[in-house]
Image (cartoon, rainbow, N blue to C red; front, side, top):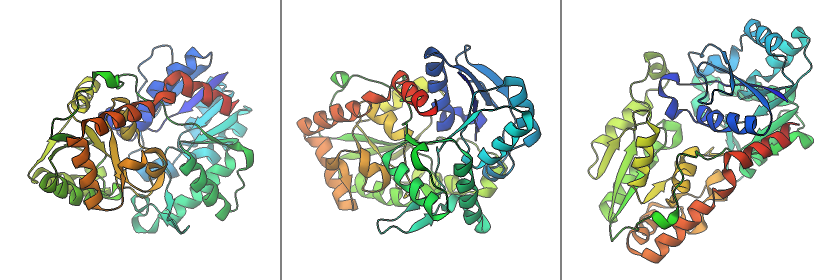
Length: 384
């Protein structure tokens, strides 16, 4: 099977902060091991030389990634590679891919992977647009472009049951019937970030927590900052917050300056330390290994979080708000609805050794089916 994997890299200078790239870097070699011939079309190659590479331009903004598919380059790429399957990791590009296949005279299946949903649903079933893609009212157009992409795909892959439910509901509201082309295929865990729970030393009355998510406003960073202050004040806890972006381009700051504002606020909070892995995966592993537990983001439309999986694969219990995929995946004893509940859970993790070790083992076990080989098998089964 010849697979053309179209990968949008949102931040080529900070690859460690790009979950889509990490996904491809783990998955593409595993697909190759399983017998597929994979070409990754991307601004940067993946790390395995067996995976073919086709250089593409990196879109300068998140809106160009959705509304400027580059038809001429698509047609040329398809004619050159003659794929049997094209993977659209930017769902909105699927109609353009379909048109490019027609123009190139290539009959290939289009598999769309919903890495990011531009919407979420409340507990009462109300569809809410993602504010990160709603600058000057563009959110409705992004939603319709996403629905058009779903309609153009032969297969639609999502990370989780929560994402499947939301995607199905959003498609139905825009007149797209997904039928049996929807498949749940979670992302692979990073093989470099796996630790045996037997090697974990539980906290001795005081715990270190880590928050390793993007500091965008739409990730609920203001809500996390509120909780962080409570945790360091009312629980035997100190916190490390990851600075995943470093210095961003002026164009990205102009679109959304919230990470810089939140980082500055967190840096001045007593009991909170800011850390960077500087793009080094080994340094990132060491930062995770020095923590005792992770904290999930407060993003309402969270259909998956690779950063949560990173912590869990390292045997770190993750505490999180009872929302979205988090409520589906995280152990019920570690979910909270209020800051007070979160403080109580963190305090118990810090002081109750048995409770901590039980949840360290559960966290690690929850990622057991996310090895690249297992995920690649599910992936190939979905796109065949």
